[in-house]
Length: 427
Image 1: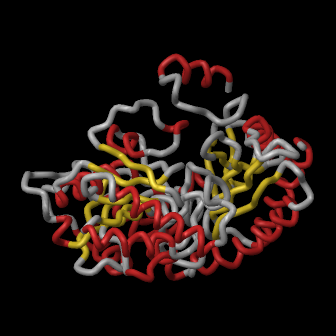
Image 2: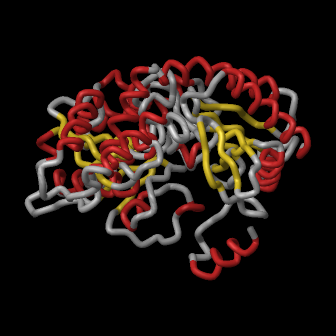
């Protein structure tokens, strides 16, 4: 492994982060498990950063990819593409957006970049509202709206970004308020902000902030925001790259927890729909999607082999009610971890929804983030045979748990036991 690590460091960027002091090479997977180059088996509670959504080596997906590869892998968007049209039809229906159009990309970053292009063109404004603690990708425009210092390597941007309160419920100036008062205060902050600026193009928001540590506002916040936005003609972009496809259990899309005032104008997706294949995309009302007055294509967006994977994966997800499984098994896992956290002074909060769970660590007796503990728990969990992620806002001190949505109750119990031991060993 050290030879591969040395080769990695010799040819890849220094900022291309690797987990673990002794980096891990994953060679294969099956179901909710993966194996490393030494043959050790791990229970996977991070799924390639929420991307292996259904299962590793899912037979239905691998069969679809293999069969499509035997016909044609790619032709570009310059030609009619049956799998792309079929997947777009299904996503348009599922999106909840009326008269929807779908544009496929290769990643969530590119999807959000496209959404920003559409919104700023449609509204003829380069101002964007974004949430504090947010993350929307690594392109130049996406970095420009990211509200998380750890993932923002430059302050340069083609956009003017204004940051709004509300993405983090338990920190910040409104944390002490009740849910209703929290929403009211955030709405008042938004109204005040809009009184001091030219009309923005859009608000972009993750229903549950991913890289930010699986934080979220009370249900209904973005519905209340939408009422204000509509008064000014400002669009709402829901970044569903991590929350989409039923991962939250209660809803198919994260925005549905805030759906009182209708669906978003633009929805972005990626990660889980391809189950590891590179699929991203944008859904928008036709008048917004069609506002561009210059040619635009996507060479690899919607390519036949990824669309075949997406169709097979979406079919499996719906036919096996993986959203319901995320709600049931995720609820059990959340209860188990909250019971553990209540016994440990270094666990500030266990939060999330469905199979999207964050465990925030602090220095015992304080409210101060403890990134060293988070890194140590990550290592201890690996030693115990469990892979998890990490994230967080002001400092990386949140353990991120997001296994494939087919996780069984037994596997949830096994993972919780390993994580409990890792937390106790560190604390």
